[in-house]
Image 1 (cartoon, rainbow, N blue to C red):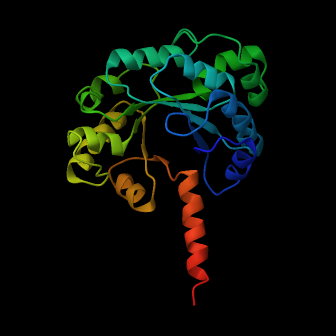
Image 2 (image 1 turned 45 degrees about the horizontal axis):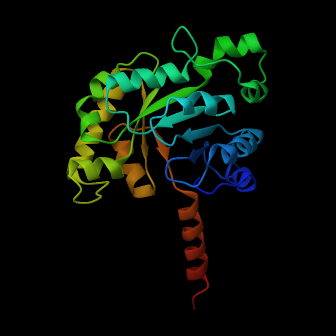
Image 3 (image 1 turned 90 degrees about the vertical axis):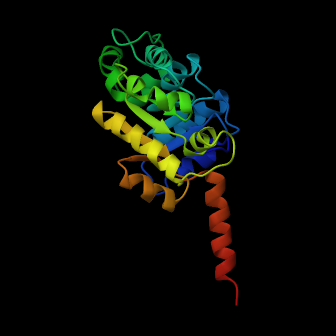
Length: 235
């Protein structure tokens, strides 16, 4: 989702997908928008995920405190950055997340002591691999203790691989790079995720080992639905 609306989030959560991700990086969603959206998604029984604004160590704990199940962090280019991400996202001894997630406690249905002992297992943190630098360091990043997954941004990755020449989400160079990410994830027992955006991309990425996808953006779904209706009315 890119549109900031708790009411819309409640409806999107009822669509036939496994969860809802709030795009705080490229969408118009701020944290004050995200809080009621996360609550609305959780109320439907779906997991709420957040793609953070940047590689900002303040975001993961804040998002988890609001009841999010996963955080996808952009622009993780080195092992050191991945370690800081885990530190921000996980409670000791794995990390240094601060205690105080009252909304998360309510969403989990657990007692405080139970939540503390289970939170590191119940929450997931993904490092985005979307630059040439990250690709070069992907083996070290994937081996970071406490990291749950790698998430590829194929558009940014193809832009950096081509030195700004263009976006090619299914190009030979992009697919080869994504195969490297998928292999690193599998080797380290991580989830391999990617931004799909459409069925063609998702099917291509499935073939090379990816299992977790941002399937489509809310504004695209609106456009596709409107276009399909318009076409069905044509004589």
